[in-house]
Image (cartoon, rainbow, N blue to C red; front, side, top):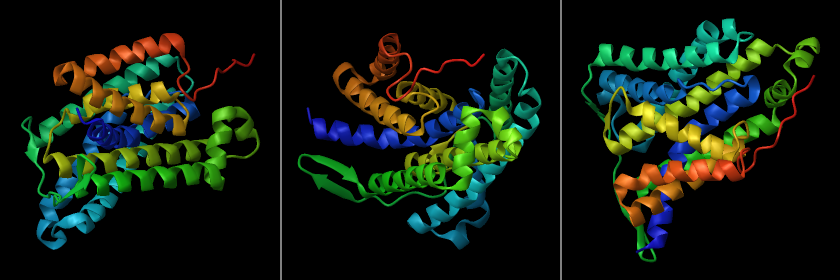
Length: 298
């Protein structure tokens, strides 16, 4: 069994999980909200790209340049919808009990899924753009140029996010609010604006992953965000939810677990293996790989 091939496959899948997991971690890190509608923003990004392609397929042509242009449009669309979702569904409940917000997130998820099902129909749609496939051979393993390009795009987006959060004024505001939102409010920080910006960035990353998935796998449907939403949430928990670098690390770990688990146990056992690992891992380290124990202030 070619272990290098399994590693490459795991890294490719993990890059998709990472883009979605980052949104989970960003939102949870700032307002302690588990946004279970986040996986459906991935689906919404795929459909936003599908709409752009359906309207202007002739003008855009094909190839990675067209894919990047479509991805930018989809990121803006899903980012804007993420801000709208925060403003309409989550902001009024910010001081409500956690259970109320959680139920609202689940309701938003179903509303997105079945709203798309009503608008586009329940049958999968064929993506009007594909990616050209050439193969690069590394030792006894192989990886396509499409996979390499998508992994490069994902890494670029992750590095850009890390730079924004750690090096910019907006990023410092995000980190400050995650520590003490009331103190930030007293210091003149526009907390609502920073939270909206966080939703925009996290949703845009999910939208980019949705477009890449549609172009690579060739079809999209209204339930495509459900499973990857669960997987991305799992990755965020493994890495330490609320920690952005932990979310990326957790996504890579989950991708590798699925790759090796599917190879050794069979593809039908892949998810069972990954989630059993999550349960066992959290019994040993409940805060995740890079998470820290947080003491409640009184």
